[in-house]
Length: 103
Image 1 (cartoon, rainbow, N blue to C red):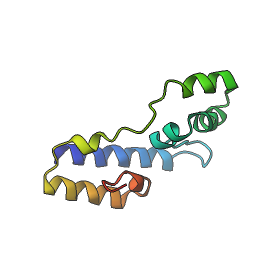
Image 2: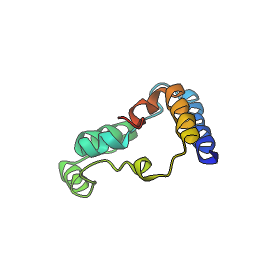
Image 3: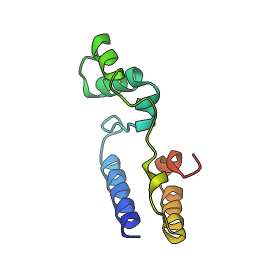
Image 4: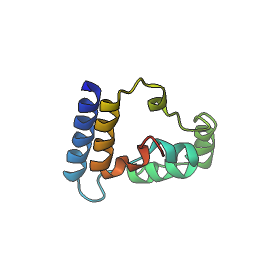
């Protein structure tokens, strides 16, 4: 339960930071996107940062990224109460929608 509370606090901190940035001053990168298409996702990040993303760099990065996302939440010992609390956090914070247990 404490971990879920802390996780909510961290997510809310991210949202506060994003809200305090200009529209083009915050870049949200999802791990699943990085795994699914490393070159395109990193090219987007590099573009946001204003740095070059040569093809060789993108290919090298693509070669070291995990072949599929790791779902560590599936291996955690969740009580029904913890699951309900986490489901509530996911429902409240829009960008967490892709991280539900069924997704």
